[in-house]
Image 1 (cartoon, rainbow, N blue to C red):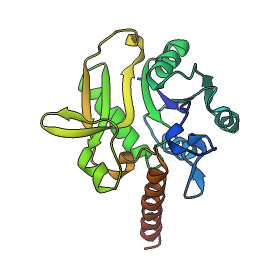
Image 2: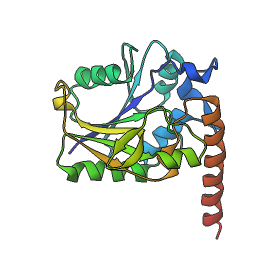
Image 3: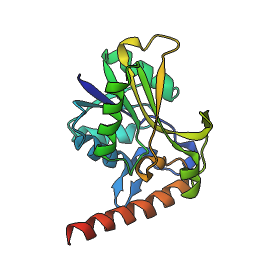
Length: 212
């Protein structure tokens, strides 16, 4: 099963209240979108990467020319519309859509998501984290799902059968992952500070382990 990762990097990022385009905001010295690309590069289940940009993110589009990824300009209307545009325009099959504002995501997590999709038997899968986990980290959830008595927050990662993109409703599975790596969507300056602290701690932990 060929899997394309579609990185959504065309949003306005108005809540950041900064001049810089959101995908280019740096966390521990590297832009968020570069960190997402690093994760995708390390994901064994991803065969191709496409960056969906828009008129709102021209600097991001320019920067992506340095990487071996395909860049597609979308209308820049909203997340879902731009995703649908990209899937149809490129005639994509199995697609992992991932927000460019997940600086802590790892290739291991992405592979875990794709494997779950391969075995769920449904045309769509959405990844969520417990709302309590985001709240514990000091993050606010813009949208809460109530599923099976649990409060869940969408994580910004989804998998879909692109051949069925025009269908109004697709049966989907919700995959709950309770890990900091996907709990942090950077939407506000406060989120950015939290991401910096958490990633710095993770990097120091990895460095400590390697030196043992």
